[in-house]
Image (spheres, rainbow, N blue to C red):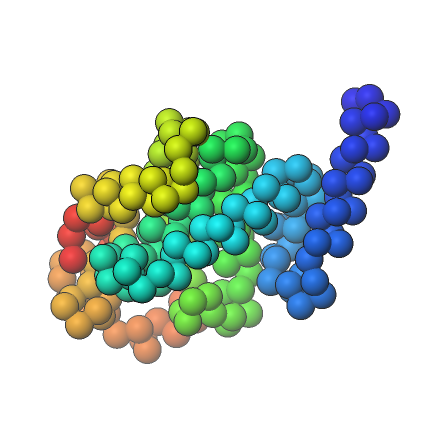
Length: 205
């Protein structure tokens, strides 16, 4: 690696660290921070793209068009797929895949500490779901590198409606079901990583 390239990487690392306020730093998990320092150029792009995507994922119209479940639902699938699709327009998929894995490792550490994400503790199938929906995002972004984020959002919603994303099986009241359709009493699985939830196509529910 040339001296110039090393110097540029050091400068970008400095910009990356200085661009986060002290209040934001704790939100990045150990594995995500390691990824960011290993891929500083990509990390700066992810930070910018994430802000742009959040504008869409927070829209009431998007929530009403999907199911509004920020955990295990179509809105959850939309968020993961949209973010990764937008990032895949600018960043190599192999780097983003490592980021996705780092995020799920962080979720597992949060689970061990009983720290919730989007109001719920993570579990094994939620990680499987997130990684699957990340891959959908990679595909959309890689195949559509020149279109605007608004159109990426439309493509993601279309793929979710077609059933090409994964979500958790629920009843009409929004309670989790197992693969046989039985209601899951989450109180029985307090601080349990492997909960008998059921992953289904996003065309369901």
